[in-house]
Amino acid sequence: MSTLPIEVTRVTADVVVIGGGGAASRAALSARQAGADVRLVAKAPLRIGGSSVHGASEIMSMGAAGFGDRRDSPAIHYEDTMRAGEGFIDPALVRVLAEDAPDRIRDLIALGVPFDRAPDGEDYRLIRSDFGSFARALGVSGKTGRAVVEALSDELVRRGVAVDAPVMLVDLIRNSDGSVAGALAYAPERRMLIHYEAPSVVLGTGGMHGAFERQVSTPEMTGDGQAICFRHGAELVNLEFHQFGPALIHPYVQLFSKSCFVLHPRITNGLGEEFLPRYVPVGVPLEEVYDEKVFPFTTENVSRYIDVAIAREINEGRGTPNGCVNFSFAHVSAERIEATIPNTARWMRERGLDVRKGLFEVGIAFQCMNGGVRMVNAGAESTIPGLFVIGELAGGVRGPDRPGGNSLAEGQVFGHRAGTAAADRAARERNRGGGLLQLATDRVASVMGRPVADHELAVLVEKVRSAMQRHCLVEKSESGLRRALATVRDVRDALDVGCGATPDTLSTVLSVRNLALASELVLRACLHRHETRSAHYRVDFPETDDSRFKHSLVLRREGEDGVAIREHAYADMASTLSAV
Image (tube, rainbow, N blue to C red; front, side, top):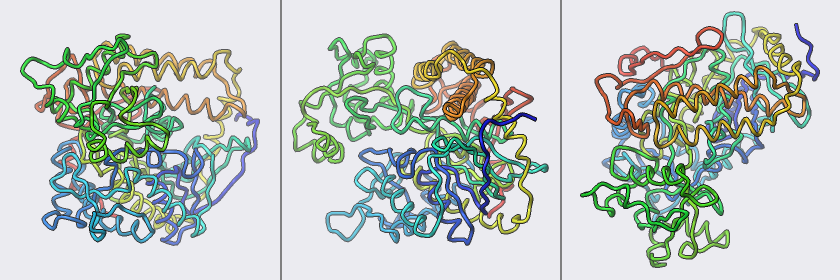
């Protein structure tokens, strides 16, 4: 037994929700509405961290049938989603998503979310997203996630949900039978470990934006949930599929959606050269490449040449000093800009910028993980009993592609279901013990008992980010992925051998450790998929291979430090899923 140099305090609750974004806020509110005593624990202050708050684009929205075209329906929403991800997503969960999304929209409307209205002021302004048969997505001036989080957080605080932030998840606490009994977290401002004793834990810790040099959210998302769940034996699915594409990097970060590309911006490298024509094959019109551009990157149409060209110019040293390329809209009329990208134009004006003046530095930025910890039922439970996973952390309803608007819908649908299921489980399991806390505190003590390393943690982080940015975004290959994997393994070894933590550095050390492990899992999944499919572009396997790879890959811990990968055909599993 190791001795901890810091205090451990105990907090009891029925349900602990970890995360501060849209999905976690929805889960906390729903659990409270179901009568549970709820604690919300967030790594960043409420309304500050996470993809929901910071994500924005011309068409950021939440998809749900029933608010526009009468020909649309949850059944068609289901079919659109299955068509985009068939073979890689769970049909039973997708049906839940499509059928529940309209009610979750109505919840948000009741909470005051001001979804955009059509010019007549009566109907909602609807967006037809990629892979959608009809316009069904509702937005709030391109910053829908922020509006959702603000409404939910106001309501959960009003209903008495206690919020602890900034507090970082350290570990899960489990009973001797393997079920969840709570969580261990660290409050850096108080230099204190907190033992949350609860029979239900909901994780909504988000993605792993911090693994990449360029990303459109906040870097505190370091794959904590993915790494911790993996260490505890949970299954993770579809990790090789993630979303990324061109984004404004300087003077501020902003995703560039299709709307920006239909304006045909002039794109130049750091040498002033218009390089895109060099990458487009003879016979393919440059106009078509621009007009087909979607976000995120996909190999399914000719717009892929834009992302490939930008990434290669930067990686081969022909970018700007900031590692970007330049976009100019100077040739586009002010009237067309206002008609096509009104949100982008407004956001720039708010920052003292004019879309039609100057050069804007653009790079390839990570946006979202499509894979995550596998949900096994409609209550968003993981393969660990009592552990519910939601939002970007969760896997099962996002495959190689997904309709736009589904991400926010997933967070609300499964956040609500997880919160309700967690409250129900807590009512049944309320009298159980506090779990095996000593195992978790011993693991922390072992990290704090080592000598503090001489090297800077920031150097290790930059090694991971540089390797992932270069080798795990647009163009992937066996050699590049293995170079990145070797880098990540070196970082893990450095942390395991010589990187001790103090109360001041514990959060950082644990974050970097999680970042390295989560990155390794993604790299291993990418290495295993010997084909090109949607955003997973293997230059050494440029063709899609349905005969060998039209199925998901599930990763699970094997032994002390191994990774087992198995094939998983969701279509064969639909009948085994239990509804909650």
